[in-house]
Length: 403
Image 1 (cartoon, rainbow, N blue to C red):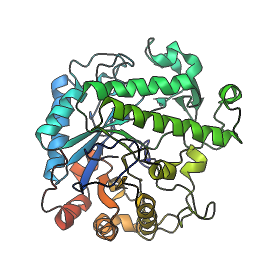
Image 2: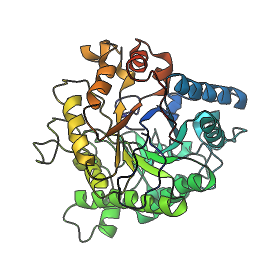
Image 3: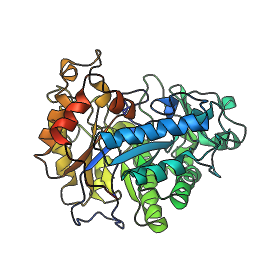
Image 4: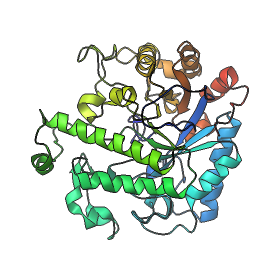
């Protein structure tokens, strides 16, 4: 979701059949029809910080009911937006987006309620975590005094106006896994979902200061880039293994930025000219995670229109279908509903039928098992009718529940 709000990143979804380790084909699962519910900066929910518990719950239920009305069968709820939690976590404080004050008890259990109410409606609940983002500012003093980032300031790197945990520290990787696995252990969630933020998106004129960590842990690697990719690989592989040991039926999915590498960089890459390549810029080898079966599903954010010169939706759709072929990893496509009707977007996005054409095209590729929409606010408001067109053309019958 790095394109909307904190976007092209924070996002994905999936369904509930257990797999251990490598992906393997099984009985066909129902098509996934999902939407992201972003909580960071109160993007989708709660509509603003400080609402009463009853008002927050009412808004959440409205989003779930909207998903049902639109014929969807999964919601991807952001439950760890900035190293804080939408459940009573023993590792991290209550999320600021709830009350306006990080660490303040909101008086209810949002994640527990979301799981219960989603399941009651035949919806899967995918818990969406951001592994490394600590804050959308660089002042540790604005974090609650007991925040792990203040207790362990050596874990934190300021970059691009934000604070991040350092992915190069083994103790950080262990901590963020523990924090996320707590939700898996305590709730009947259907999937652990990550968005596209690993190492942060590049910021011109700035460098991510992991010099000390590289000196300590980078021996034996050909370059800092190779070491960084290994750090991200370890987080993905270890988390997948721990999820399966904890609850084998819980799936693990990731929603990366849509371009792994351009073909001009790597002949295995896509026929694109993306300004960001996850392999090189975010140190995220998304293709390898699929090919090695470390994840259960992938939701590349194909946030471009059909025919867009630099990153053509049609070309990327074909490329990702090839990546998942034979792996048993499910491919769902992240769709940029938020662009529909936005006057700042190309002409294609002013046409309410653009997204519907995406789904029509995707039916030509057997690897595509569904779509996920960014995000809940637009699924409900539907400013130019793009979502209504998708429903009319493709979702007349409600999808089989994934449960």
